[in-house]
Image (tube, rainbow, N blue to C red):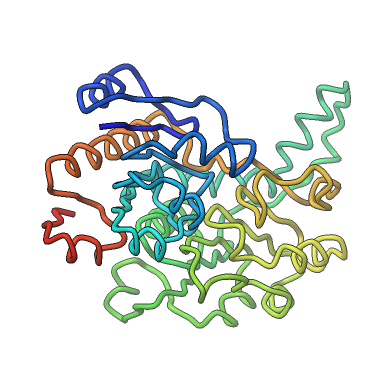
Length: 326
């Protein structure tokens, strides 16, 4: 079995040994500079362990022996699932990891913005020691609006209660029983935007959520509100957000994800003083990446045994007559 790890992932010797027991491994420690380079890496592979770079239909077609794409992540919006399914290629992901890491990181961004941690740190390193420059706001008694109540959103709600925050939420499956159990109020999107001091996004990227937060939605927010995005960059219309931040129509934003990644150096976001920007690292804790690699390796092992798990294009399983144990 030819296994290619097409880009950098967290891979300790323990997991590398398990993969070596399955076949020959090629490991790449840098991101591909182009799709042509990516294709050169994966063209002879039967299994590819991949992540952020993504998999286009062209890449899939140029790898005739490819049987499995094992994603070292939860999201699969950067994979051409139609092309993979058409070629009979199983695509697996890691569905349940990093929800504690991402939820905690959302609060790190909130606190950084509200308490001006980053600004104070940078200015102190330049010798400025004037406490009057850093007036902040507390989370206590603020209203947080949570878009999406999966594992991460639920954890955000729990943490918010620890700060004695009022919680509003938008979800596809509201109910009075669930609202009572979680200690929150289900509202529609416009109401959440209008009432929240902090809006935090915890949704997958789909055709329905792409640009879900655009100019109209941002206009509904309080001028004192902040927006947090640790989900997917394209959920937010970045151009509309930049305009609102420049004109101070909202107070700020904490962004770990962007419409284009890596974030271009000439992005207007780089020039704004009311944003905190980080390079898609909300998931990045020792605990979470170890979980991610463990499940990814297990996905490969189970595929080779004929019992693929965590399959996101299940039509392939039906066609092959294999049983998914996800």
